[in-house]
Image 1: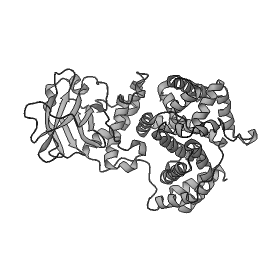
Image 2 (image 1 turned 180 degrees about the vertical axis):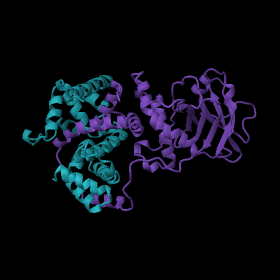
Image 3 (image 1 turned 60 degrees about the vertical axis):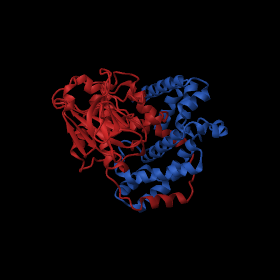
Length: 287
Length: 181
């Protein structure tokens, strides 16, 4: 497939080694879902790799081999990355199509020349990739290269508000902060029903997690109810908001007294936040 | 040094879990991989750690090696080099202050090979790099061989980081065109 000059340059600079930590992680994320992009990066690695012929050989210490042998002692050779068969259904819907979808979204990405440079503004392609990854990160973080393992930083996934929801589009937000994802929010584009899956958060005794919708179209955060009491929470509350608001909002979780905020206002700073990304578009793109 | 064909065979055996083949592969390639990462990390201990991790990854992902796309040594060196770049980026720019001398000593091109020892691919790549303006040749080679960040390159060339970004990008696109990628 044809890639924009931005993508080509990104692949080349990854192979050259001049990207910063975040950009490298972005490239690795893209590689994990986009085989063509991976091939492009590897082509660059191969082309530049011939330069290593000029590098002199240096013997490492003899103990290095002992350490390698010890490290592989219990490891079986692994097959290429596969998604867990036992992935909960919530991942299945987000993960499998995401891999298919990414290449077409990559084209959209080229609309904005500089977008990939900005850590905070992942595009939908990257976001879809991220969703695919999260399933893996949660199920088996060790399968991922280190750059892709869950990071100890807040990751606000931002995507352009997709076109008004069409039937069967699925949106996902990963609510997280300083470590692993805490909640995964999925919204059905057609019904606006949402489901929250608790993945890594436990409220202190006597406290509850409450989910809020924060939108610049609304004067204050709107409660979407208490979540986290059980592994899944499903609600239709979002149906009263228009698609643009739902798509562009930030979703935040606060700690409230047991049972939720008594006055409709949040009482803590958000501890987990995230934005919706289109994980499964309404119509499957031709590929 | 084994021939590329022998290395391919060894990697295929490693993919099946053959530890003896892995040991031979290690013996045949360790000094090259260590040389590559040592240039970037410039610390024996860090370089050994990275080489160790690289071989563990080579062991676990040998099944993904595609001899149609890459030579064995390039594939292995990429794994090690990527890991070295990750480490050096995560360590941040402090390393530049730690070893100012090393920074100056590091030549743009290590160990020039006699031209007859170069593969055609290497000659082609060097030809394309050689078509860049002299400063940009240095820029690309310092980035590749020494793993320098844009900030380090900016300091070396006494130019803003954004200019370095532009140069790097332009240079890579020029190389691409020259190689006919």
